[in-house]
Image 1 (spheres, rainbow, N blue to C red):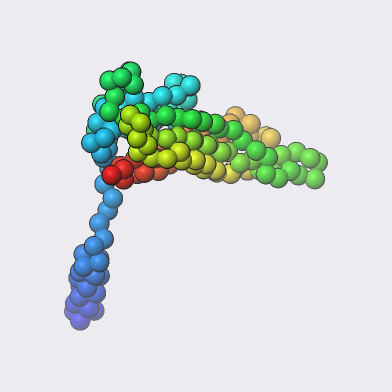
Image 2 (cartoon, one colour):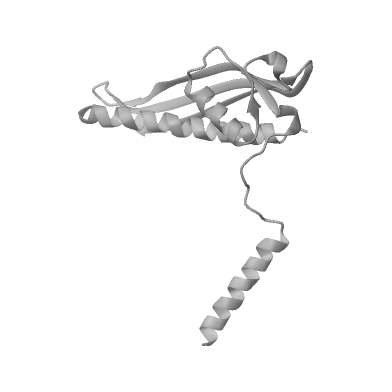
Length: 164
């Protein structure tokens, strides 16, 4: 019985410590009033980042418009690039490890006012390559790229939600 009481007391003190320090889980990002009606300017409306960002921005409460004239803010994707690089090769000069990267460069403006200066983010993930599992490794690369984009979109939305 004393052991259970001690564990219960320890748990209560831990919870009170978390509450007293102001800890709380971060919820879904919300867009500030300046981005209530947003136009997304990009050269590639089919990129993975654009499609994912568009969907998440709508989920965060923004109304996406098709013309910059109708918008309260313009989110401009200046660069949207993805690819892979060889990280290591075997003694037979066969790639054994690759790095998948995704880079996005963007800015946010409202009229002539810059709400967010140009930002550059690059995220990478690496994976090992086995020439006997070509199809599986291609699928792994695709899944890594999607995960990178989800992380990038989350990062961008956090930055956008902090606009004052």
